[in-house]
Length: 440
Image 1 (cartoon, rainbow, N blue to C red):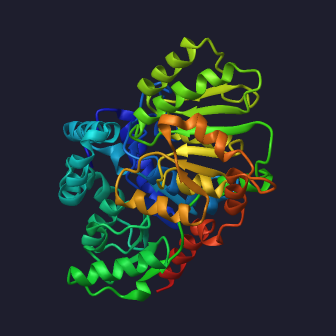
Image 2 (image 1 turned 180 degrees about the vertical axis):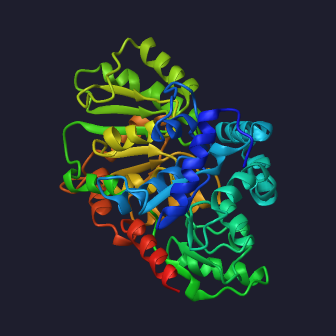
Image 3 (image 1 turned 90 degrees about the horizontal axis):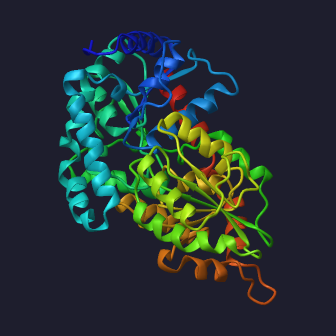
């Protein structure tokens, strides 16, 4: 058992381990340390203002989305339970968690460091300090589980597969990195992939690496999306005229923060005009520094910031220091409301935005997988690249009808509503794969 410095965290670890062992679908992800929320879930004293350490919203939100799909309206740990070993890294190794987050933030927020980030992606991801840190709690949590474990992060999946555990591994993007195929020839792993093209890429990469992958163990499921987000599309009509609802978002590490400032600087002054035809919601996730910077820009222009639940407000800025709560803000106030998202083309926003029936204007992608996601939604005519240096003029063009034709925004939203069910049913299909694997 890891040596934890918080007695209530030790008790949470014990409870998480027991719940994971009793669950029909024990699930592991690697996304963040949301320790205070864990203590609250297990009935121990917690501090709602303590900031989380966050690497990724996607690996949390996807796991949570599958869980909601399994549970329905009532949480049932016997059906499915999700644990992130990052929460239980020992006090001695906690510095490696902070180092990994800090490296990620620095690389994610500075365009000129993207080349360095690409080098890390290509050669160093399997050697990041977090991997050694999460291994002891991960092995402790799963030591008594002998039936299939669902993995939403390849680091956890590979570690457990190496221990002989049966793993259903979700490849969350339409892109296959080398570490996804390290265990492609193992009979104790099944892979859930984004689409047929991703499956082909997986088989090709496995062959190049000398791994004999069984095509029957690589199953196309589509991306996992929270069913609460999919419900939003049923009440959302494609925009034709009137006020356009825009949501500007960052990712788990504060990605694209510089572009966000460009957009806010341009759009906020427009809100003073009586005939302004848009409203803006800015989601800063768990990043207080980004939140404060955007609030300062808005205050400089003397515009009132609305409360999170005030959909009539000209502008809102959403922030919470803890990932679980920040994710709920998006689900409760952003996805049901927004016609369109200005966001990076990633698994933590793009899939969800489109599933909610919205269009996307994409900020700079952060890796080959995001380039592929951007291409997917551009080909479906749901997405375009955001011209952040001239976003107001771009919105003017995209909201204008050409003669009797629809505007680009209306057409994009119609396309989002007509999207292939593959993009909506991923959570259901992954659950089917788990149940089929358990029978074997």
